[in-house]
Length: 258
Image 1 (cartoon, rainbow, N blue to C red):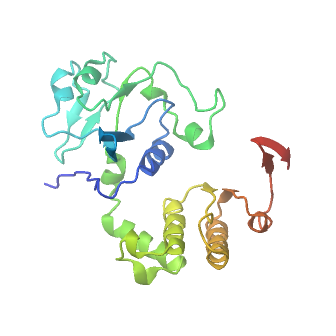
Image 2 (cartoon, rainbow, N blue to C red):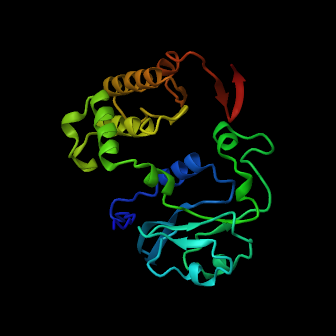
């Protein structure tokens, strides 16, 4: 039977926290709950100090200690290796939280949102009262696995987006072999891969020359409009800002015109 595992190449992780944000956006986890975290680790002694990043979460252990201590059989290990929690059986005793060596399990006692009582669209859509008072964790997106989201479909989507940003011929190239503009275009393609409703971009052309910045910005807007999503872009470039449908001007963090 197929056994699933998630691998992170620590040589290439730059601590961008994108995986953390993607998990929270997709699963609507409340504040303080991070099924996917990236630890920022400093090793050595000055001046020989090294900084590294470690993505962590439920490891879906081969012999999960959380399974052994669960008194209600809510924690289960599937035949494909994915460790799950049945919220209808969980009694909220927290025994599994104590047993987990990766600090990957969470429990909240009330429904909370990132900005107070008002839920953001994805939070309202994904809020689940069944997750209050019970333990939750990464479930390896088991619903997607069971629905048959094949790797082939994901690759086809990636190729489609690379073609849209003019990088189909660079599909097999590592990031180090791409120019700054090409890396920005890959980032834009990646940002719309899961069909979000809102695209957030912070200085998407900040490190590019004028010609490359213009080309990247035009592609970003074209992708946003073709996908029918809203784009919220932060930029210090007045020329780029002038191409947007609406401009909000801030000074020292204060909105001065809209």
